[in-house]
Length: 147
Image (cartoon, rainbow, N blue to C red; front, side, top):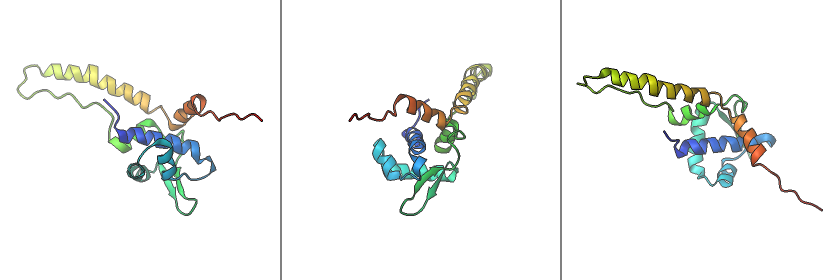
């Protein structure tokens, strides 16, 4: 399993949006510039986010985007479902003419179902606000200027 660039950029852009929207809407151009992401690619991602009601757009000269819900309500699972459709491993299917149908069922129940359950457990409980908090505590240090 791997996350696509779309998912990685989607998560990056939502963290950036949450961090930088305290003073109003944030433009896609500013998110793109700060993170080295194509603005056109972000437009595709944000179209999906708008459709899923994760973000809302604000029109006008000071326009841009804001989260449509609090960052504590948006989970990583939400983002993956919007951008990928699913993050679960595919089901194990028995080969047609296989004498050992039980092997496929064993793999499904003891491997795939358990992995998918753990993925749900982690991703449905990890929110954008938790990602923002971790980022803020570990990386968002303001430069100190002494006079």
